[in-house]
Length: 337
Image (cartoon, rainbow, N blue to C red; front, side, top):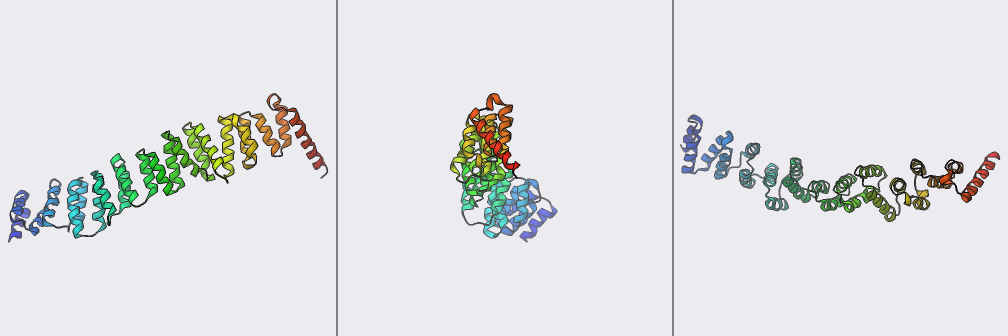
C-alpha cells in the first residue's frame, strides 16, 4: 500500500515535494529508492536523488547516478554516494569515479589515503584525465596518482607543469627514457635551471641520434655557454664518448669560444668527424685550425693551399717546410705507381 501511495504521488500527481515528505515520514528503503529513481531524471533534483539513494542504502543505479552527477559537476555529493556504493558493489567504475571526485574537489588527503589502500580504480586513466584538465590542483592530483603506480614518465611531465624542476629530474631519472629526459631538459633550460638541465643533457648526449636536437634546443634559447659546459663535462666524464660529442664541442668552440678550439683539436682530432669541423673552421675563418686538421688528416695539399691563400694568418715557415716535404713524398709515391 505504501509503495502504491508514493507511485501515485510521483507518476500521477507529479508532486515530487509531497513524495519526498511522504518518504521522510515512512522512512522505508523501497520508498526512498523509488523517489531517488524519479528525482534522477530532473537536473534540479539529482542532488536530492543521491540523498534518497543514501537513505535507501541502494547502490543499484550507480552507473546512472555517476553519469548524471558528473554531467552536473555535483562531485561533493557524489563522493558520499560512492562511499556507500562501493560497500555494495565491488566494481572498478565506482572506485575510479571516487578517485576523480577526490581529485577535482582537491581532497588530497583523502586521495592519497584511498590510492594507498587496496582498490579497483583505473589510476592511470584518472591520472590522464586530471592531467588533461590542466590546472595546478589537477596536476598536483595527477602527481599523486602517477606516483602511486610508478609511472615516472608522466610524473616527470606533471612536475614540469608545476615548475618543480628538481622533482621532475628525479622522476626522469627513474623513468630512464630519452623522450622524458628531452622534455625535462627543455623545460629546465627555458626556466634557466641550467644545472638541472645539464643532468638531463648528460643522458641525452650519450645517444648520437638525439645530440643534434639537444644542441638546437640550447641554441634556440641562446644558451651557448651552458651547451659548452654540458659537452665539456660529457667529454671529461664519458670514457667512451661517441665522435659526435667531440665534433659538436669543436663546432661550438669554433662559433662561441674560439680560444679553446686549437687545444681541443690537438687532443681529440682523431675522435671527431674532421670534415664537419673543417667546415666550421672555414666558415669561421679559422685558418690555422683548418691547416692543422688538413695536415693531421693527411690532406697535405689542402694544408699548403690554406697557408698560401691565407698567408697573413695561417703561414708558418717551419710548418710549411714540414708539410711540403709530405706533399713531395706523396707525389713521388704516386709517380712510381
